[in-house]
Image 1 (cartoon, rainbow, N blue to C red):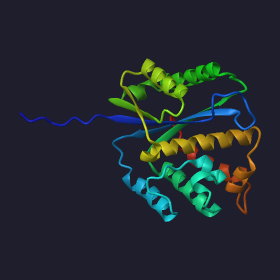
Image 2: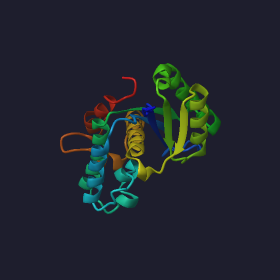
Image 3: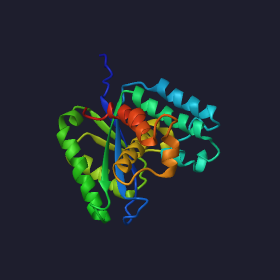
Image 4: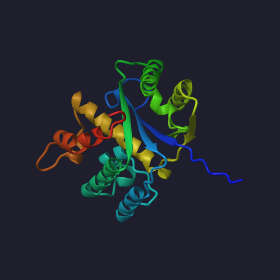
Length: 239
């Protein structure tokens, strides 16, 4: 008797957050939750190679995890890199999302409207549950849905486990090490761009953000809308 290998259809969801559960402060008025979706059967090796080569060319390890907020602010591992080098790394990650067969979804929550950890977590639970319910046929069509999160905040770890398992029966949650998955870094990018979009709509960009994104022809706001937001909007989940 011959046995044929059965390939499971697996959906990977990489989740990252931006913000904290502390009290409302001027520097942290929003909380962002971003999800990146990837069909595990789609081979993205050549896209990953491009990221690794770009990092090595700029003196970083091929396994370095790109963190976009410090990249913009020239902090931590990026403090020795000049503006063109930091911009090019940022663009490599944007191009990775643009060219890969992935989609993304971001939710932005105002801490002014949802004051306190309990209210903020409840709001996120409702929004995430609504996303799953409105796309239930899609999520349930996979043999397995594997969710990757780095357990950076226990509230999100608990939320992800409870909400997804309450709506789906094919879910597995795994802890991810950011340097091991460029798709997790893509979720970090989605958080950053969702926050920048919200800041443009409300209090405006910081000086470091304006310096990073402005060009001789365009303001930072216009450059973001033309060169980044439009690109990411084309890859939004459900569109």
